[in-house]
Amino acid sequence: MPKQKNSVQAVEEMRKKTAEDLLKKLPDIKERQDIVNENLKRLQEFRDNEPNPMGKGKTKHLAAVTSTHGAVTAQQIELKKILDELRRASEVDYRSQMEGDLSRRDLMELIKIRGELLPLWVNKSSGFPGEYVGAIAPHEGSKLNEGDAVAAFNDKTEIWILADIMSCNSNSRYECKDVDGESKKLAVFSRSHLIPLPKWKANPDSDKHALFAKNAIVLALYPQTTCFYKGIVHSPPSDFREPYQVAFEDDSYNSGYCPPMPVAQKYVVAFKEVAGITASTAPKKGNKKK
Image 1 (tube, one colour):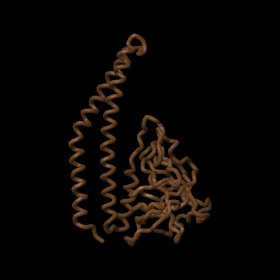
Image 2 (tube, rainbow, N blue to C red):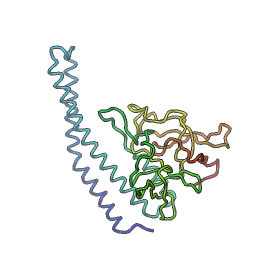
Image 3 (cartoon, rainbow, N blue to C red):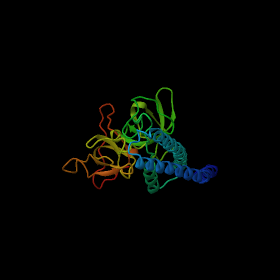
Image 4 (cartoon, helix red, strand yellow):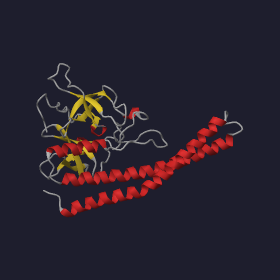
């Protein structure tokens, strides 16, 4: 069913407003960055000229450090607000496009872009990433929310599919939409049949422990499909812009695994069995699945 005209107009208005708001904020962002740069320059000059910053010049040194820290923190807060706005706008745009009639090619491109736009986790004062960052999953059985992207286990096909939660019921059952479903009818899943997907990327430079390690057994979205299959991490990302390299189970290869394929952090979760049922193996060579 085509998107209704008012829905299209609402999304276009949202895009326009977001762009206008960002343009208005750019001068302030540049001004704040100039302040940060100036503070860093003064701090560096002080350290170059003062061999013992904790000696006679301790007071000036601490004042310079405090000023620099304040400038950096203020800039960080503003940048985070902008990134949050972009993330919300991106999600609205994604939902709008998913409501319309998409070609197979457009659907795959939309899924790919959604994975690439996963925001990067920026360490807070605690220094340790929280739930939904990279490989750090929420507590088993924890409540999920409307709009969450999940891997959902289909009992009929015994395959984990990519889905979005559309509504939550009080008895821990969730109405989900298969992103590749031809029907607009929602399917109901129990919490044990859902694996929430990451909401932030983990940065290998600062949060390597929040990534799946080499040889970890995972469920990952097979490229150009909407299904998750069992595989092992051939190599984790070495940079936050890089995907995992995942080798999927495939008995048509002597090793039992296909050559490594790139999979975004958004679409890699811990392997899980449902009632003793192991996830289906990935498509064989020359055999395309959903």
